Length: 267
Image (cartoon, rainbow, N blue to C red; front, side, top):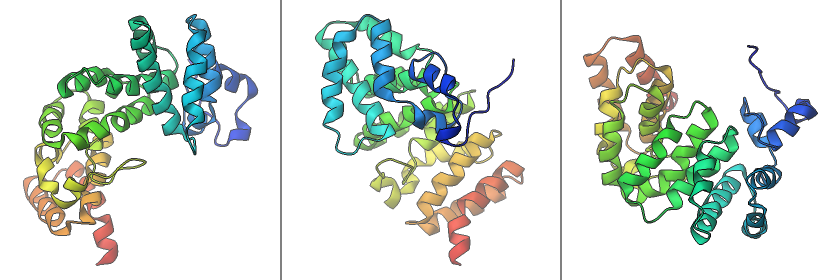
């Protein structure tokens, strides 16, 4: 089977590919395709396929209230409103369809639907987000940690305790999620001020990953420590020195180099 590479610019996306993306027939293969999808068009198509067209106008009203719509704010608004409507209409099948939909953007919405369920405990929310954190699609995995990050900030210690168990998972996607979701600064998301000031709070997540064999995980751990180095450089220097004494592996050396890149620039 030929793997589609995807266009590098919006204008280079073939019309038939864009049409299939906007109707939920295929997954995006790169960030450009993710951003090219018209989420309102896709939503209308998905709801029509599910015979839930009456949801659209209510979700559209919420979308219109977004001052500056972005990829993330649209994901969040659609996903949260879909959860609210599923509760209003006692339509639990809708959420199952979202979570298992072939289109990655629709599964993105599911991430926010899971988190919006305030009847779930923190542990239950993590349990619900787990399959999305392990999703085969890079975009769904990113949205999964962004969706649950506010919960992590609100219940930091309990979240760290849960995620400290995730780093023992055989799936590198899950181990990476535990690291990425708790980055002190992160990307396209709120900072975790407590971890900017006290990065040692997350040692139970970081320490076991010092020589992780997966580059996907290594990149995240290195970026985590680079974040922390901007506010607590001594902590990062000391931890990296400790890890280098523990391990001479290429994985550890790669993580340390990535972790110290900002400090090395300013030294």
